[in-house]
Image (cartoon, rainbow, N blue to C red; front, side, top):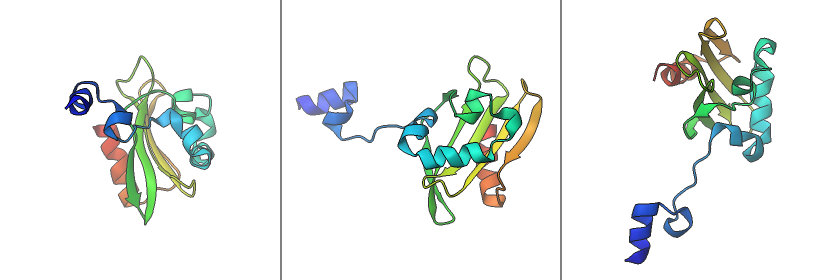
Length: 132
């Protein structure tokens, strides 16, 4: 009974066995090849923006999706302190073999900028993250 109460009220991962959540900035440690794939497709003009180049911004936990038979990190990041209209969404293969992105940023004057060469399925997922 005590274990259930603690899990319910405190959501203690070790006691409850829940899966820990991963956030975009943690990709660098969890899957360095994945971050390298992302950086390889990031246009030079945006490599100095940490929220784009390192996915180090405001975000929700990563999702994992399967596309083309491979697992991908799926998420979005916004510019700190200015999220409204400033997002980059991404799909990055966990093994670093593929990466795709979509940037929409009022601050940077970018309406829609695709990263990589996403097919129709990837474009749909990326747009869904940007549009909420």
